[in-house]
Image (cartoon, rainbow, N blue to C red):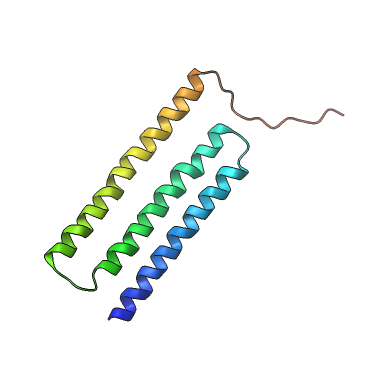
Amino acid sequence: MHIIINILSVFCLLTGLIFFIGGAVGIMRMPDFYSRLHPAGKLDTLGIFTMVAGLVIYNFHHLSLGVVLLSIKMFLIVFFVFLASPTATHSIVDAGMRAGLRPWTKKKEKE
């Protein structure tokens, strides 16, 4: 049983790492401020969810009340990140719009 728990937790941790790397690459590759917020908000939230899920699964090696309470606390952190990330992204976009920052547009070549 411990081997299955280890495999599942490593899978979740590696999946979270892939999400975080994808978010970092997306932030570097996107052309403007607004499009960079999309990978930052989405992939980081998915990354923290899968990483915490992997830690919770690994934590269940020794089942006790303390382990269950710790797992609930970790998922509460994920819940608050799920609430805060879209709110923060919306606030940042709103601040950019109010400051007059224009979205990126593809310029057509003149012939």
